[in-house]
Picture 1 (cartoon, protein in one colour):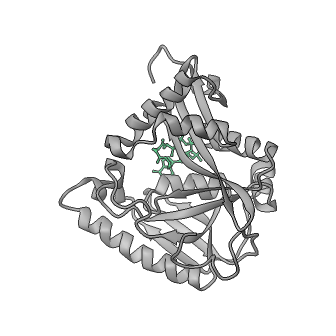
Picture 2 (tube, protein in one colour):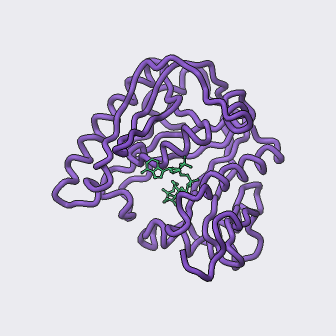
Amino acid sequence: MSSSTAAPDQIIIRKCISLDELKACVDLQKKVWNFDDVDIVPLRLFVVSQKIGGQVIGAFSGDQLVGFSFSIPGSRNGHSYLHSHMLAVREDFRNYGLGRKLKLAQRDDAIAKGFELLEWTFDPLEIKNAYLNLVKLGAITRRYSVNHYGLSSSPLQGGLPTDRLVAEWWLKSNRVVNLLEKNQPPQFTIEKKIHVPAEIYAWKASDTNRGKAAEVQKRNREEFIAAFRAGLAVLSYERDSQGNGTFLLGRDQFQSYASAGAEQGNHED
Ligand SMILES: CC(C)(COP(=O)(O)OP(=O)(O)OC[C@H]1O[C@@H](n2cnc3c(N)ncnc32)[C@H](O)[C@@H]1OP(=O)(O)O)[C@@H](O)C(=O)NCCC(=O)NCCS
């Protein structure tokens, strides 16, 4: 972190307001994902989101934007919800809790607007993101989307299909309230585990080893889809001291906005 910027505990989390603040989100997006121009979410969509009940929330170090979360409103079977499309923290401010704080600010704002559900997709090979979503926030997942965006220009994707899990964050559910307010993680019987090796990041980044990452993606894709079809959901996550990640699956009763029978398996509505 540069000496001219605030310490992480002095970062202010608040809604982005001016056009310049929204432009700063677009610039940070470019730095974080390194997308080609064709894959960039443009300024105009940030403006639209702000005006139609979405969310653009920033983490500010003084007047510098060092992180943001971005959502758009969605609707399924007559229920309104928020879809969070991006969460980004500048590299030198990571692992200080800002990602979590940006999600908590989304939650507060969503509840104030009357929403019960915030969803987003995440790459099941990203161990850190899975840990943040499932363990620190209490999201669950029971839907898998194969090659969700088609091939991506972001180096973070390593040229692999853009497979995604859909995180559902039931904002006022007992599991989320107990976790966030009482620090009580959910209790459940683990019926299945799905593993991601710590080497996945190095494999994705290497031309010679990318095939190994592709094998893990393919194997895990099949396991997730079969497990979701069998009625299991991802309810938590473990990381070990070597940095390996493990999805923990079990059963629970969850609210759903999907039509009957549409929630499980390999499909996105
Ligand atoms: C995902 C991202 C927003 C998280 O922001 P952040 O401010 O670093 O997140 P936080 O500090 O709130 O939480 C991260 C947690 O993951 C943990 N973590 C860090 N590296 C990890 C790893 N390799 N494996 C597992 N967990 C890891 C941190 O220790 C922290 O948990 P802790 O508070 O219990 O220690 C940030 O890494 C980022 O911008 N990534 C690139 C873009 C991206 O992938 N966005 C999300 C998908 S849209």
